[in-house]
Image (cartoon, rainbow, N blue to C red):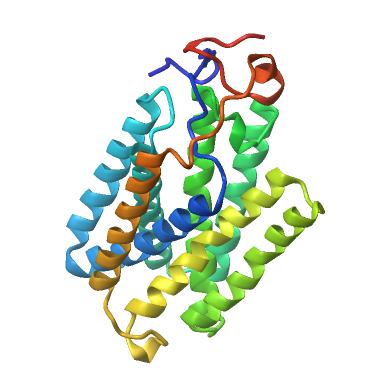
Length: 276
């Protein structure tokens, strides 16, 4: 591990995040749903157990991810999954512990996300997912991922519970919202980095709304299947898809030419000091 982000100038042998495609968004949505159902299931079973799983799980998973020198699908997606579980627990804990409204927590996490993006861009000059090739940029990336999970959790609860849309109503709303950056990107109307992060934030309430819709009881607009069964099914699908991309390499970012490394924060042949 580097001494600190300011002095570490290494460049990884490859981008530490997957290529952005259909499989990325499907697996990402699964992690959001699993994070929601797992957090609720563990909280109902044992609060101390939930705390141990959330804290130890995110520490162990992120430690493995940050120590790796290249993208490895199981390592990366396990980190995303544990961020989803811990982020849900943290957001729900703030709401339950303080009793403040979902609108307030949503606004609070929106400020946190904005601050992280501003500081990240000021430090690194880019928010591109293709530029996650140094330890400093990777730490900014995971801070942003954790904050967006917390924001999405609060926003999803706001629409489903405080605005009385219900879980499937919220899923429909966020499904329409996530289509906006998708269509804008496809038509060439928006910056791809802005479009990516806008869609990334919305995946959290979208996936969580579906998970709650299937798992929660009828009296709160759910289908009543239970958080445990929803978690089990989600984990099975998650494991199958991660195994698929790990074996096939379908989500690995291509290695660009060396001469583009400084301009785009791309890849270099080996771990070495970063230039310039």
